[in-house]
Image (cartoon, rainbow, N blue to C red; front, side, top):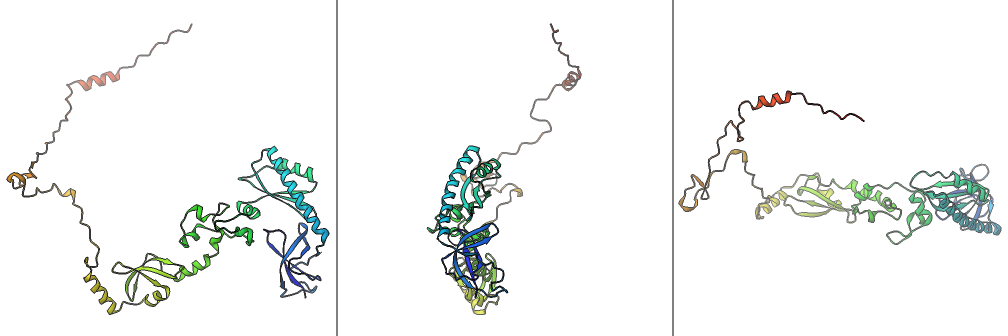
Length: 368
């Protein structure tokens, strides 16, 4: 019976599935397979039983491996690794000579050397036509320059994350999932860029690992900031706690209490009992402020007119014509004339006459 083999071509790449065919393959062995890009050598990392088989005895949708790898194939792999290191140094020198704004990350040499792939990063588009000519002239094979992002760069090179472990993208992740700032907000994380960003400068991939659990928890919890009528009176939800599976509420006496999700489901959407109402009323009467917040005095209306003088003035004054011992001056009467000195008669007429005079043109000196 044929088996399904999970084959990996490099440490950071995806897992591709092939059928074992007539060969007996064990986990950890190297096999030769045919791909769209040519022949390739990969390592078997898992083995599964085929659920369905076609007429040839191979699993449906899977190609069979070409053969098992031998010692000569392993020597070819080591030679290709040495060639990739030399090509990396040569390409860096060519980039410096052409003064291209790109950073070379890695070089991949196919098993049969039918193609070489140069991975690089750049802030924008790069015109590398002259660079390809130099590489083709040097290695006489197909050359591909592939631009990648900062996440794939970290996956290829590997790094140590903020947690002290090897980056998830290098260790076990095969595909990148979108990570948004909304995930960090729903998980109540401190929005510090240095704390929620990885080595690549993007949001941490591990934020998406627990997102499903947080979504289920928030679906069970009531809305934060909303008031609910319960069997214990009116309660306002202040915050939630994912790890304790609890929430903090504010009761009618402005006291914070912590309730579990099960306790909340028991009291929500139920009218308050008579005992709860009487108990809350008694607590408000015993409280020094009567269970109510102090109300700030309303500001005085300035448009209502001048303040009345307070009684009991100093020096025996009764306050009828003074304000704290000071006499108030009567307001000045407004006059139609302004404070400026009046202009003599005929001044405006003289000004209009002067404005109607034509201006004299300055004569330019004759040109010599």
